[in-house]
Image (spheres, each protein chain N blue to C red):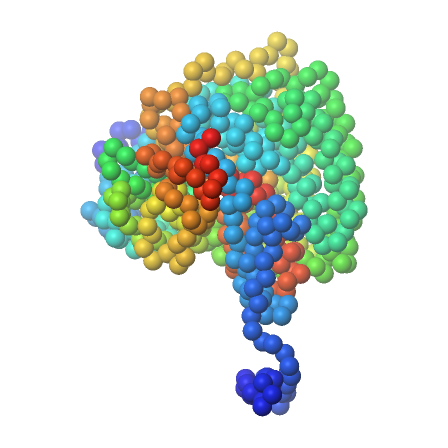
Length: 400
Length: 175
């Protein structure tokens, strides 16, 4: 490349490509520009700021800035007792509160070493899988709207509302449930709810297929996602990716299967990975597909739970909840498969207090987002939107 | 050898971690502590802090260890021992399927821990978080800034002796 300065201060840029092709650009400013995306930007799904270093429409590097929603969960956790943390956990990943509660309770129960009634396990798995579908519906719906498809967004939110109603019926709250407690759940299922969940499963099956066809067979959607933001499997592992992100890179890794907890070993489900026929392994479309497939697996898990769940006559879901939760001294790392990946809690107890000495949340979005810098390198600015959408971040969990 | 009696009781998770530890101990000897085989979270501690990065690379690349995946890195405050530290939960994802936890500690004021951000990229942001919350300095970290708190925040919020500042840009902080 050769830069010439003319007398009138206009620069001429001569680029030699190959042997003969010469590109001459006149009057073009060639310096890099810093472009801020967010904190208030529809495609960042919350308050995230991306500082993009751009050269024209090409992103040289995008650096995420976090902390706009930082409430210091970990400090709060050191100030309230173990059961009191559950509502705080809800507010981390507010789109999948059931799953977050589940992960936290698993960690504390490991520390307490208590046995959970079998029926409670079924209830937990069922509400978590319902919540997983709701969360994936938001992910898919907002991803579609990021890329300009409005209808799937409406369909997703319509169907999600049914789940919200079901979970509200079970727990009393629409989004932040405080339903899964340490050692049990807050309430047994209301009478008639099993049938209603069954009806929902039957209703949603064809809708999921419709959604799938609406997006995955949509030429515009495929062109905006296929082959963009490719993450090789080994790099994904090195970045600590988990959940649909890691599976999108072709690795069959699911904590429900690989580090099984609760009653998942008894259930029959598939760990979804893209086969490369529609998408390129590791690209945006793969991650979207994994979420779409997973909804169907969740439906089948819910059905199995409905079939296998023990009868509930005179069942007290709070029977195993300890009166006073004061674990013996020790530390534990407990985790569960969230819709966004591995949510882990590192909890330290000193054996004297009813409050944890340390409660660290390993947030899946936080880790997934940390690869943004790598993913964004050399992408077009509109593709950046497509990449952020495919990561499916919830800023409440990123910042905690 | 001394565990031979209790072998039946030890869970496969702990025994696989113990086997992994044995490989590390063979190579690094006194630089690592004895293995703590508690059933909840088996771990060992790195005693020679300056060799932490070398040990981390060994953990990741040795064919019998292959801890390719760092699940979590948490900062911890140990006020009684005047120390700060990190706890890393490692896992051999997709390769050997075993897990182990590693602890590294440094002194409370001016203590340094070598960064492992180049070994596992996950550690990059987690170390920034540990610096943000505990003030642990990670030597050789590519970009050690606060990540969750504002850049001009005073003090390290998760230290046990933390006192929040009175005002922040004219806003009253304690509520």
